[in-house]
Length: 155
Image 1: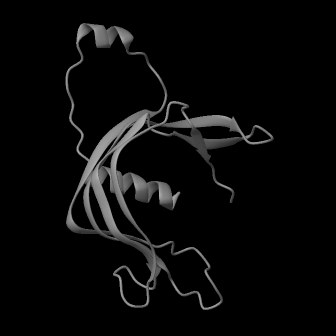
Image 2: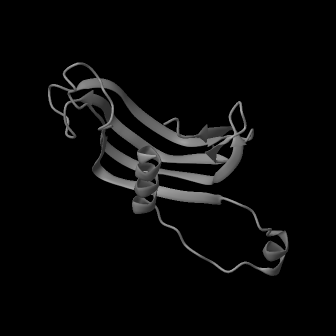
């Protein structure tokens, strides 16, 4: 649940959402549905860093905390029509509830660049961090299959 809250907070803090009136044709197509549909865009200034750690994870017997760091980000990313819904009767016994996330219809990258993705001890990159990869993406990804992911509590 912490991860869902973190992702929601991150998206809401860096995204821009504008409201506009619906015209008559759009109103006729609207129907009451459960859940929400999100479209958002994020733009990163030069030098943006995103750091994440899972404080509840037990990495090794030293219980040293590790951080995943996306360092020196620039560019932008926009996703359209990602759906989040609560579903009932989930699981083999049909007794669990879940949060169902449907991948966005498309993701647009505007010269998104991440100098490095690192893993190590701390939220800023040092010589003790392990470089995993760098990223340069420009273009569009489409997901026409409406791929869904279900997240549910196991404790």
